[in-house]
Length: 238
Ligand SMILES: [Mn+2]
Image 1 (cartoon, rainbow, N blue to C red):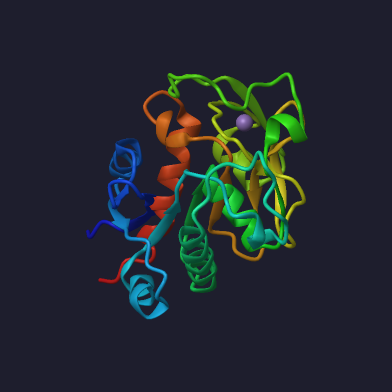
Image 2 (cartoon, rainbow, N blue to C red):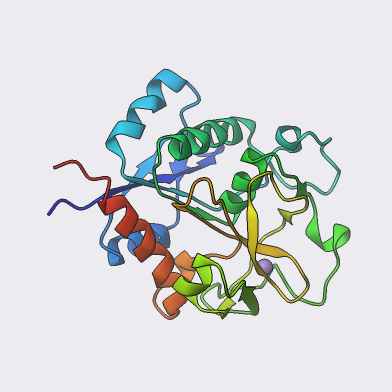
């Protein structure tokens, strides 16, 4: 049987003029039975549209902050580095992927991107805008879980992952106002939205933590990639 192709969004290194992505993303997809493929940042729609027909599932990966203009805000001094062209490409690709009923796993920056795509807003600098005793920017190693996420026991995500899981956490921003049509199903103990679902597009998993750094030790991290690959297998053309 053909393996499903999982397209992964890339980060852009301006200095080296390269598209790049951490090895763990590729290994997590391979461990779950998928074929990972790095997608170039391609703002020209006629160049990226053909990916939709050829890719069975998508992962929107971690990375730099999202440009505040995309959620109707002014950039504040403590907002981190942003890449406008990555944001606009990924917002278009995400909307198109969901419109084509492609399964999507959104991780960290990807989770924030999902919220913005649905019309929500972000905290531009979490430590000053929503101070908390919980450390959301843990030091390395990122393979160590540092805080809990409580999942709504009635949600499909809790059935997949469990009601309470341990996660890692290295994000500078987070969901502020939730986007229209999204349901918050996972929270950290200080009330941050760490997981969302969309009843209209049920093959969307969106989490604030980094399961690709936990797939070797945490069942809940592996389960996210396995669910994505399972859904994507249903998209494979014979
Ligand atoms: Mn966190």
